[in-house]
Image 1: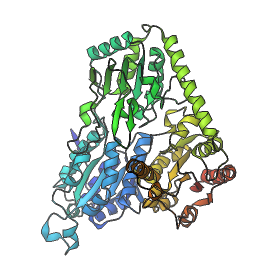
Image 2: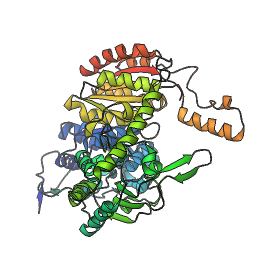
Image 3: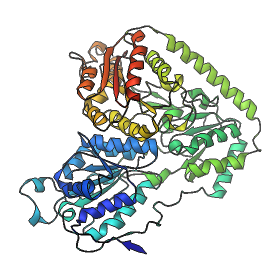
Image 4: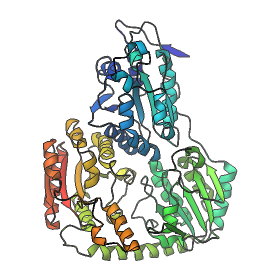
Length: 578
């Protein structure tokens, strides 16, 4: 059964789209303006009373990235609205990263009019595509373009369900411009409020899970790798219980925060943990290879550090998230046991099977703790090197920021300063970090979405912001000021695209060409961007550039005061190129 919406005077077809946005409680819509959805825009502002709240962005990539960050931090979707074909193409990379990062983003687009007689000269022709969703079909979970207004409710409901079913990802709904602008002359049936919006989670095959437990009980040195399990906050504590029950160390890939970093069984970044393991348990893992191999970058040679006799158990979504176009699925782990299941259900179920049956957990834990203590001692020594150097070292910057925020209810958005925050900070709650940074030109937009998700909880959200990334989309700073998104940005500014600079150094050494020329096309100096002035011009509080480590603490204190008052703040710190 479905309910029919009562027709009111002067109703428009685009009002039905707003009805669905309200029915599914989508709170925000980030957008860059465009005439192709002028009908929907008017309906949101007037019929919908600006619900979802429209957030003006300077670029479509920013619009999608804000929704991406919001979804990662909150577990809930928001809308990104893209103008016609050109807006969709502008947003392409952001959509791909949302897909790769399994972020549910409800993307609304527009096209046409598909009725050729209603197209304006030239502009409606060059901005219209036949089956527009094909442009992003390889990296969205679903796309659809209803041909009549009565097709909107069902396709919207299906899109929402597909988007929010694990593994999650973006969907694209395309609405004909002329269709939006038509008067609504009949009742359009909407889904019943009692209809279930998302299917139930996928449980593991009980027999397969019992087999996994048996393999783990037989193992002497099991190790756990987790990547996307932490997308659900409940997995944070559930994984602690599983690790402690098994006495097994954990490697957190950090696509989401899966495990507290100061727990004695957290051996992330300690590859020696794999050298004698006889059982590997992968929990919602796609990138298993970086943890378990050593790479020679110049020759691209990859060597496993896992013994050939090790048995692999893979629990997650496996083949459910494979695209025939994008190779983000990475190399196949030839696991001894592969279980398709939602780890939110599988982790507690596996723990129950293991409870009271595991032997020698004390011995395993002691060995893991010794390995971790050795690594931490080495990191502490490394962190102390050049402590007072100018420009600032990454460990020193990580320490200064940590000292400034550790007594606050804080969140780190994306960048981890080459993992120094994971070493020096205390990630003690699942919301502290929604996951590691992605490619260049993604961080500032995603960070805004993370800050938006935590704004009402009054948490101090920190973005350790690379300079090259911000230069892609400095206009995103204005979005934070315009929409009152409090965010503390601490620039990770080495005045270079240094990740690529390092690659050029490797090539120079391999080929015998001058290392001194590796910076060409990589440095961001002469002139150096003035990020503090840029931020001030966009309505932020800002200081810098600061290249003396002793000056950072006082600047952070002043900036945090402004952020707590509701103003975004930026501190430009100059860091070493290493």
